Image (tube, rainbow, N blue to C red):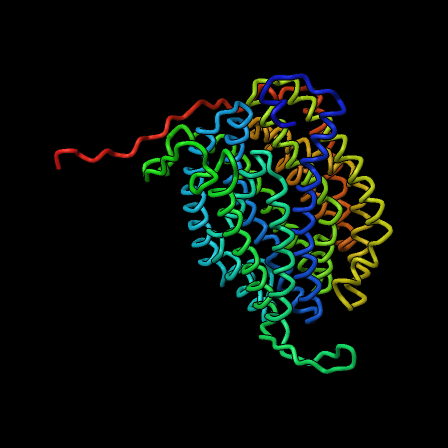
Length: 490
């Protein structure tokens, strides 16, 4: 069905909906596995006590900042791949892949060095102290040290999705979730005896606590990164740059891996606004953490657990947003702006319907979700109340997520980035600062609910207006550099 986009043939409404569903389902499953990993980490660490939970929660938004910056840096390359695949120009798509590998790795190394340098001081900047701060430092350091590998994971999954392959990233993310459970089980808790059918069996364990949670998750993500890059570079038809699956001439001269001005310029046009936007938004989330910190350890832990629990609700939105990026990107690359606009409408409506249902489920199941994370009643009560406030914003949150994905697909990121960080800094942060002293954690989440509703409204307005299709990325074919030929007289 993706070939219909490339061929210029007309797609019926039914075909568009079916194609959207086929691309969205694997992407949603990939998001689900990612969210389950967060649930697993939070639930396992939550069993260690409130202090360990607070140690993870204190730096969680800072980790999202670093992860998000690395992920955003890869989008500029995946969008170019989507455009060239839509235009059936696989040679240029492979050239972008080669250059993206080098550029993304370098960016990941830079971010890792910065993160490791600030890790001893960050928890104290965020208001942590004593045992909580020391555990936060170790947890943060392990994650940022692995950023170069994690960035390649983001790049590989993004380019596979951009080329229309949602199943492999989704499957690998499920495998990563399973590995995370296994690694965490043996690394977080000490050795212990368990009873199976009346027989006592000793299960070894490292007993590393918070550090074990970090090592377990990083190890699972590294395995996934190796697998996705292997599949992309050696198995993905049309995109592979090595191996027997390549039924075309392969030119892996080292010069073809050096980022060119054209590819970097296009990547920066897409990724730079997204990277800046993500940095500003995560800065705002860190500000929210600072606002929450004076409310006490219970509020910090409850806020962290509620943020993790809410992810289950908006996970379908990000999955459909990934599908929207692929569909609008390939349609735009094929020169079919009307089709791109149509896919924008279909994906946004789908996201709003599904996330509305998820919001209802979250409102009903909020106490049960929080009980999964912590046995501490005060933390569970605060968190479930926050989730029920947030549930009312899910339909409009979906509109902002999926519409943003559709706009990324064509390469329009500057104004959407401004809309995102403007909304959170001008609406959420001031409201949270005003409401927190009197309403506590509920005030912070009320501010979040109001801001997400506002953000969804402005994204819907821009989607319907259609101006996003006029600010897309312009890409051209790239010729590979031939390897130097040996001198026949030498």
